[in-house]
Length: 199
Image (cartoon, rainbow, N blue to C red; front, side, top):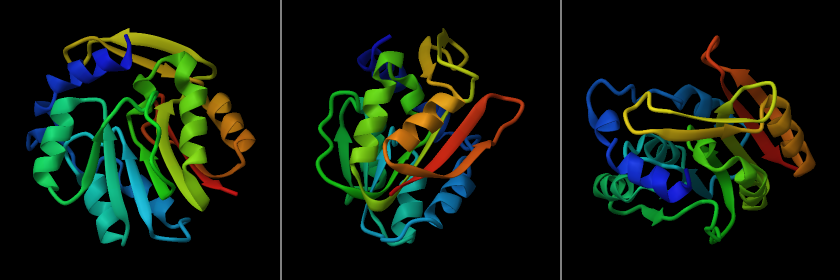
């Protein structure tokens, strides 16, 4: 599946995040930890921002000027309706030329949908878009090595890929970042996240 197909699938899934059953605290503690490492509170970017605005709210409350980007047209539409004064971009992160530098970037439960062959390129793009001392947090499939698969657990078939724990860790270090935190936060599920800081 390509990112455009992923976006169309998520257009049909907005109800999963709009319902009362969705846990709006999902990922918040992890982001609060990441924010303890940030040195400046300027611009922030939420990659795969979705429609809930929970990270946008957190970043605003922490003194950032946040922006969001998502491949799903419907997710962006709903995000804009919740936060009309926030800049949102309807873009494919694989192709998008990020328009600036940020002190904080989050890619929570999002870039695992991009093609495996694009993982390195996208992580390079995100790291390059950080200011010195900027922090990136992203979640990924915490496998032992590279892998990719599809499943229909949420309804429509979705694609997932990962470089694996060592792959993402070594790439982050090669990109001039310092590892601040690595955790399997939903063990025994292979859900992991990294907090890295640009040197």
